[in-house]
Image (cartoon, rainbow, N blue to C red; front, top):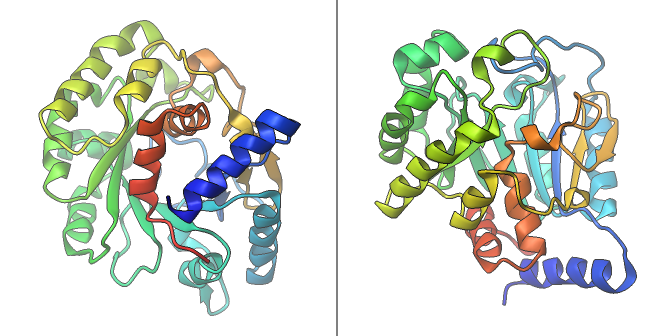
Length: 301
């Protein structure tokens, strides 16, 4: 049994026996700035303070001391974060000394060679015309960067919405030839006018998820587990959101739901598959635990 699995069971026992809640998964938005203006994203419109490198290290230290052992660096677009000669890569290298696994989520518009993270996710939400409608005219650049990337653990994440769901099969088949695996989430309605065009309510999810399950059974690299996908049809999993901690560009840290301090929380609207997977893992669903073990490629530090 690997060291990280032992750590996870330590967290499990602390909660079950002593009711001590220790976050395991951390997300750190280094910046809200982005070079894309994606239709579904509320963050590129937000401004405010960003941290310098020493302050970023302080937040990583604090999240480590809280118990976080998986760190995802995100944005905005995290490749835009800089402090003098310090870049995202310096943040990754520092984080790798603290956490079992360090990931990056990016829009893929920057070259992805020699990236030292353990995991690299590219957000990718449609074929050419749909992609252009949602993310702008970056399709060819992003595909080129994906194809030229030398990252061993390059994944794609699809945010499913009413615009792109009709071509879901095409996107997954296209990506399956270019990345190691694919994860999904459903668009969360933050409250903008665009939500009327994007948000898929629960009663319309069932058939979409059944299509994903069919693709997974056919051998396409949909990484989300069958259990999580089936639970997401009606959001029936028990959400152990205390397993998650999130940091914002100004250095504020919150524990719990990804939406906390970022929008209005409505659990019936939740589409965050990662929350479902980690919650199921805590409840000893071994398919979720094994999926996490495979994706994050944990290191002993």
